[in-house]
Image (cartoon, rainbow, N blue to C red; front, side, top):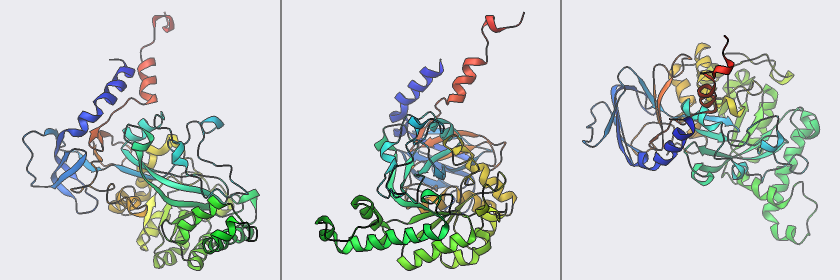
Length: 424
């Protein structure tokens, strides 16, 4: 069957597959929310997990999948992506992740409203075991809001699991509006937070133009109230230890929940981050530091942070390329690198499953294997953090999905050359 027909057949069969009862038996099951289960069973019905354990009765009508000698985990969660928002980074018409905003402020921007549910980059990520992603905007001082997207076939509405889940901002001269110095960037962020407070108490006056000029427009100020009211956290991109401390002071002064993204020098203040219960999204080094802000980065960063008690989500190293949509699948290798440099293996697996789900408020649905959770399940040929292991079955919302990726289609097209291309 041609790859295009395989894709059509997979899409047509998706609803029926989701309604099946499936029993994955005999595998080494890592629920993540509990201890490993040797010779475990996972039962799926109607898109949900209905049972997980070592002595689970298999329903008579279940389709059995023998996972003996395999590893079974939840679907992976990559919490730093622009998947479905960017197709080709160098082509402006395919980029939906950056708003024009006003003077670097785009707090009202909701990028998931422009996501592409037919992105050719979804299949490679999903085929590699990634079933949920955080999609986040970029650019400016306040880039906009982030949402959690489920990689299930369907429409954009089908895919959005929860949104918004965070506001995204950035510190540092290279990422502030107009490349402004750090102190000015922090001052500008304080101004916006102050003016959001003013707007909250003087909405009617603002509408009648009876207030001073505020630092942002109505929609952006409304969006910032979600942060000040504690409805969503603010993800602040910061690598330098002093920038991270500046973000921590802002969070304390304005009483908002902070998540640090990047955190290249986070290991230097790991005890402070742990004491303040501030989660960190970070990765191992996969290139030399890209700026002076990350000169203090080290391979052991994620491991040192987690050992200090920080809630660490492993993501692609900021600036190293893994945040690009075509590298979403690399998140398990980032976790494997973190293990190689001191992070506990179980903590590393949690850092790409349950920890990001908890951090962004979707742990009641994804990130672990437990009765009542969405049936996002991956069966691996071996250690999922090992480069040589492969996902053999990927279930998303109870559907086993293996859609041909662009790489698969190219391989199929060129693996057999036509006679005119063959050498005599």
